[in-house]
Length: 306
View 1 (spheres, rainbow, N blue to C red):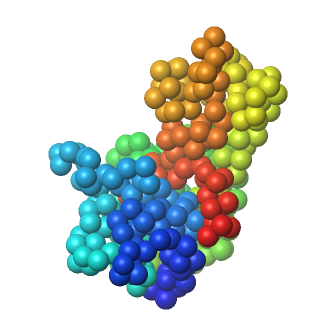
View 2: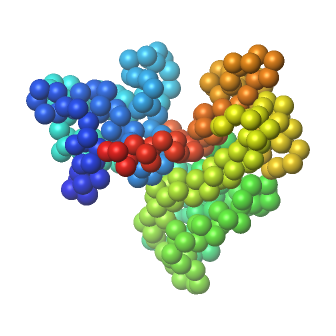
C-alpha cells in the first residue's frame, strides 16, 4: 500500500522545491497532501486547507476533530526536523486514510446498532442493503439527521429518496460501487458492507463532479448577459432560481464574505463563476475529517505542469 501511495505522490513531490536536506518543508507538505487527496478522492481534508494553517490558528477549545489532520502533520514533522521525504509523506497519507476509514467504520457500526443488526456473523442481503442505504443517507445529508429506530430509519429513507436531487442517479452509481455484491439472495458479513461504504467514500468525489459540472453549465449560460467572461450579473444569478433546480439565494453579504462577488462596478455587482462553484457553500461536509467540494479546474492544469 505504501509503495502505491509513494508512486501517486512522486510526480508532485519531484516538482516541488526541497530544502537543503532534499525534503519538503511545512508549506510544501500541506500543499502536497491537499493535491493528493483532491486528485485521488476529491476530499478536502479539514485542517489541511492550502489557504491556512489550522493547527496554528484555531483556538484549542474548537472542535478537536477539525484539527486532527493538521495536528498529525505537525507531530510527524517534529519527528523529522529537517522536513519530510517521500516515504514519510506516504506514511502520513496512509495514517490520514486510516483516520477516514476509522470514522466510516464508526458510522457504519452506529447504523448497524440503530437498525438492530448483528455485526458478528452474517445478515441477509436485504438487511445489508438497508444498512448501506441508511449509511449513505446520513453521509449525503452531512449527518444532519436524527434516527431512533429501524422504523424511523425506513421512513426517513423513503422521504430522502423523494426529496434528494438526483437520487436515481445516485442509486445507479451506488449499484456500480456495490458491484452486485448485494444483488439476489444470500447473506453477507459486516466486512463486506464495510468495504462497500469505504469504496463509496473514496469514489463519491468523482460522482459529485457531475453535479458540479451541471452547476458550472447553468452559471455559464448566464455569462453572456454580463458581457464579461466568467462573470454573472447578480440579478441574473437570483432570477435563475426560477428556472432551474438550483437555489441561488445566498445573501449579498454572504457572497461577499465567500469572495465570489465582483463589485468593480458597484451599481452592477457580479458573481465570479469559478469562485462560486468551488466555494464552501457548495461543499458536502460528509465526515468530521473531510468535505467533498467541486474541483478547482486549475488543479488539472497544475497536474499537467507537475
